[in-house]
Image 1: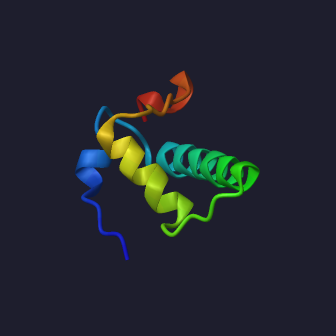
Image 2: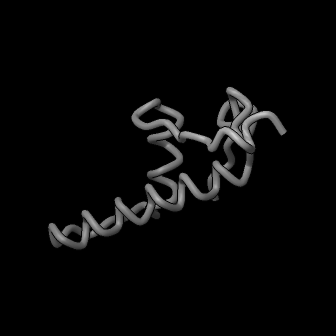
Length: 69
């Protein structure tokens, strides 16, 4: 099981909702890319997406209306 410190992931006032939807979207992209290439992924796509987020490989953009809640 992956245990990540939420403070490091939720930096910049990112809401948990935005985090979940953004990571889920990236995980689907990872799974689809692997399927198209015929590659077998040992790690779960969600784990890979969270690691990419922590490493700064992508950033989740939050809608303006929920940014300051």
